[in-house]
Image: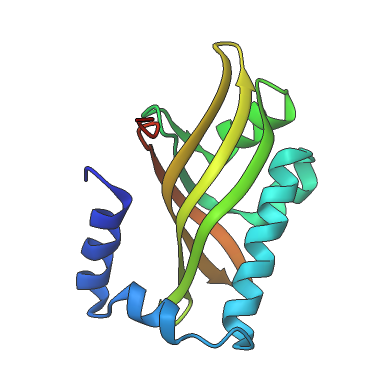
Length: 157
């Protein structure tokens, strides 16, 4: 898939529902949407201040984290990357975040965010388009998958 929007459309066709319609129709007080948003906020906080216990509790055992550079991590490799400080999330600011529940026990979080990271290859300050998949596991929302792509920098006239 070339873009997160395309990936969203593919997932929507699999589930037979438009995630965009769901996000627009979801009421902010919807308890499932609120629970997913709280879980996503907890994930971001745990990634910015890595703690093995918190990350392990938030990430699904089947996590597949596809970074914007094409590298793919599992739960084990991503937790190690964060806890060891090999990648540091310094900033994570939402520009847009949409949450939908296209099927029981599945939540999609899509949008754009500005990421500021630091790793052995240097610092990155980019706006990414992303799709995150959450799955309800034993009554708890767990982070199952991530795919993102770097958006081009705006052209100044």
